[in-house]
Image 1 (cartoon, one colour):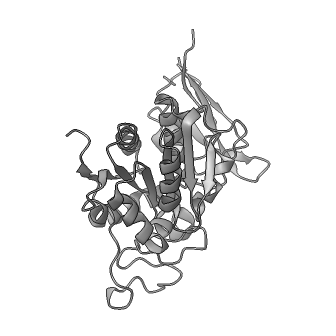
Image 2 (image 1 turned 90 degrees about the horizontal axis):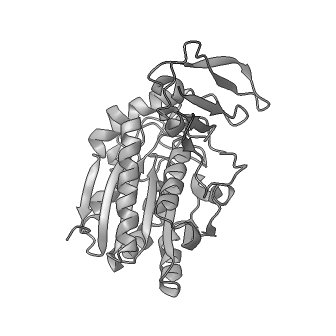
Image 3 (image 1 turned 90 degrees about the vertical axis):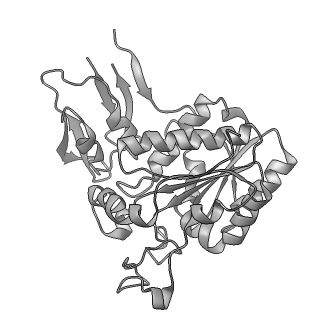
Length: 249
Length: 69
C-alpha cells in the first residue's frame, strides 16, 4: 500500500507555472511558506503584501489575498493592513533591492515600531529582475552589470547587512538569516519561518527572515555552482543564525 | 517502495534534484518538453526509491508534484 508523503501545498494554485529562471531558489521559498500556511491553518486569514522585483508575480502562485505594494513600501502597506484588520495574518515577501535599498526606511521603521507583521526578504545580492545590477547587498569584489570590475569599497561602499541592522530594532521580536543551498538548510529555513509566523500569531512584535538565495542567470553560474558560491563566498559575509529572539521570553 | 511523479512540462532542467537524490535514480534526460527544456527522468530498475522526497523539496519549480512511499 502506497502512502502519499509529499504533495503540492493547497495554498499553491493547481495549474501554477513557476516563471523564475531554472535553478532559482525563489520557488523553494514560495513552496516552504505555502506548506507552513497549510500547517498552521492560516490560509483563510492570510493577506500577503508582495513587492517589486522577481517577487512581483506572487499572485500567479498563491491562492491567497495579495496586495501589490509600491517599490520598497511593502512593510508600510502591511502596517496599514494589519492595523485595520488585526485578526488577519499579514506577511510581506520582498527582495533585497526592495527591502534594503529603496525601502530601507520603511523596513527599519516598520520593524522599530514593532508592527505585528512578518517580513521575508530574499537576498540574492543583486537586482535580479532588471538584469543583475549592483544592489546594496552586493559583496565586495562581486561583478555585476554596474560594477564590471567587482564592487570596490572606495567607490561603491560596503554591503548593507540586513539582519544585523534589524536586530537592534527594539520592536523586532524575531530576526534570523537562513539559506536555501542544501536540503538541510531548506529544513532549517522552514523552522525559522515557522518561528517568525508564530511570533506574529502570539502578537510578540515584528519579525524578519532574510533568506540567502541564488540568482544563477545574473551570477552567470550553473545552479549547482551558484549554491557552491553561497557556501564559499556569502557565508563569511552574511553569517547564518538567529540574530534576535524575544519569542521565548 | 517509493515512487515520484514528475510533471515534465514544468521541469526547467536545472538538475538540482539529480544531485540531491541519495540513490542516484534521477537522470538527466536527452528529450525536451514543449518549452524546449531538457527534463529529468526516473531510471529505477531495482525499485531503489524509498520516497525520501528530498528531490521534491529541492525542486524550485514544483515539477515533482507527488511522492509516494
